[in-house]
Length: 331
Image (cartoon, rainbow, N blue to C red; front, side, top):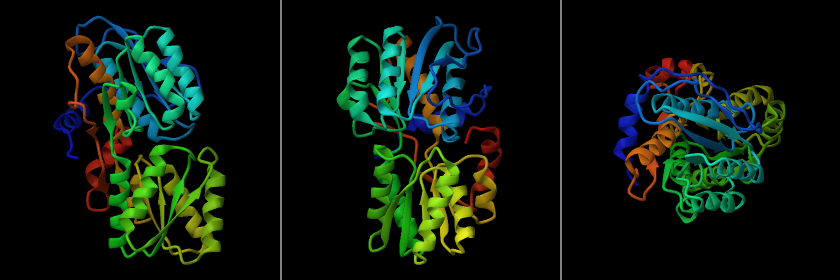
């Protein structure tokens, strides 16, 4: 699957926007992140759009998605109601709440699609345009969702696995911070497929308890000294893995999916070898902006195909090009 050109064009343009800094609100009711006044870029009527994600408390990845969504909302004169919960049934309730409040549009993530299906189909049946982002690339079309913005997690995982093999890895662990997430499972399955003859074992951790994450990885490394690579599925967990390797006296290298500002120095000094970037800011931005385009001009992006925002690799060769953007909270 090739990248849809709009994604690349939007990625170049949205950085110039004025940003409103927001942090994720895992498990909390919907709230408005808008500025309260008219947006700076359009004169279309002000409408409310809801975004429901599976963000876990403290996961900085979702700050990037929300910041991109808010940038688009500010530009498009949209009141953004953002809410999140890591449990699928609770996400479905948030979708139902948005439907009942008759929002003009809805953006959802589908990490647990079975739990979300009835509520999402209910929103579609109510005439609310719905787009998906980040998770659910295999499920969005069957639910009647118009568009999808994200990466193909299986393909992303395979790219990671091939790079592990090229780095000489023989035995890796894939650290899963949220059991039951179809996206994370697809990543690890892709890593295994991409590694070819190498061995990859999934290691489940509690992603909402970082000391537990660190101790679980440490124990695994102490139990099996032959592990030569740790692959985490989020930037905060990569930094925990760095400490775990030190504590365990392990020579295992660390790589990760996704980025944040704290990861920049770790890549620069070699503590983390590389990261796969799916551009979460862009995912949030496109999800909201696409709903504005549909509401005002009936545009549908992608022609029935997902708009891919990744994967790409970030390592020592290119980290300087995005370091300032990461510090600003957009990469």
